[in-house]
Image (cartoon, rainbow, N blue to C red):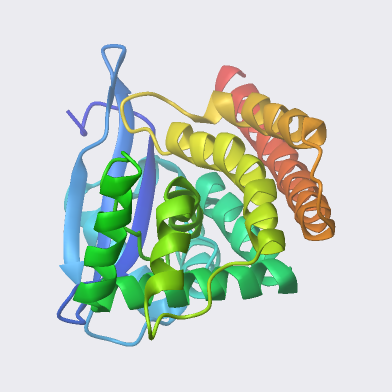
Length: 286
């Protein structure tokens, strides 16, 4: 099938296994008989240092095995310097940063630049860590949930490489706010609980993060449908959504401004991408 198609796009990612081994995965995307196909071409262990030259050598080997080197229109990856160097300088291919990844990085940056929100998240992580490692704390939380007639929900841990895990962490704490606060107050060695102002900040920030970035990232990460045509409308919708949210706290307003600026920058780079795509379309029809 690959031998008959004229053009393909490629997505690639480097990742590390639980045993701390580095791998590169290459997926190819093309349309055949009006059906979108996305086969994984290879997952290979990477033994050498992750320089642009070495990454390019790994990719070139896979492309040659499948005879697609001259068919590649664009290669999508994260925005890491070495992978960009491999694609642009060594392979001489067009590089397209992953939009979902770029947005996630923007969210992480906006959170990290917000000192008050970062401190609140750190307090949340301390609370979660205590309840994850203390059987007595977990049992106390269950007891208060039963007394209040609430479902027995556990705390959720933050994962540093996934921005939305911070959102999930805060959402869950807000869900169990009453029994959690009661449990912390009754425990002899519990960490400090969240203050009323800190709870208010969490309530302020979740609407900014959840409906826009979480939903949008899910849509853009789809594998069974083309996503490129959705990007600009989704970004515009994201701008509209953020603009209509009215935070009550100073940190909430700061987060809103940071996210709005990040979305605007992302939109600017995407408009350059679509100029490139329109050029390809023009050349293919002439």
